[in-house]
Image (cartoon, rainbow, N blue to C red; front, side, top):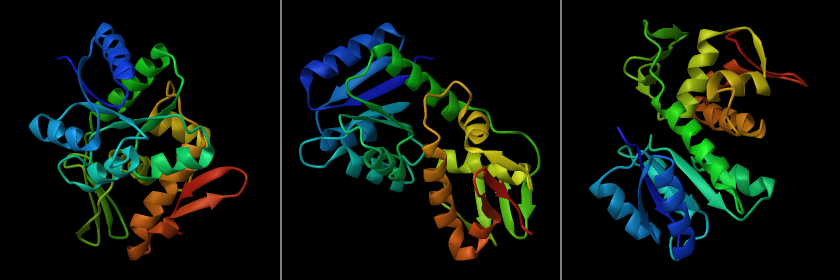
Length: 229
């Protein structure tokens, strides 16, 4: 089945170039110029992934990403941000609003295609079969893709779900950021180790009201450990 990519960018030339490159790589592409048209296009037919420019007229790409990740219908929709802003703070902000990856302009189409394929692979990963895992009232069910904190459903992104599942399945062991990237994101992913810290922070924030954030422990100069001790 051909995967569908929605390109959201206000530069016609860039949209045309991206459409040509991605079609050549075997994807089906559609394109829009702003956030409003993007939301309408997604409502008509949900794509498999959105390529989203940071700087859009009207509603910015960052704000659109935030909207999509807050909506239950599009929360799991993969997003790659396209940005000319290469500062670390901007990259962190893109990840904090829910983007799965970011590509800094100018970029090669080969790199972009590789990143798209990596994100789609992660998104399409089959859930690990088996019974739900529960630790002190924190329950994660891979079959239903739900996390419950003392019976209350938690709104986790797919990446946060995979990260928490890995931690719960491997308690008391210390993992470096590099090891977590390999295990949760995949060894062939073009993502900086800083990404791990961003998602750890978001996961802790979601778990904090139930005091489960304390289970994700920082091991200084090494990495992270999951423990209920």
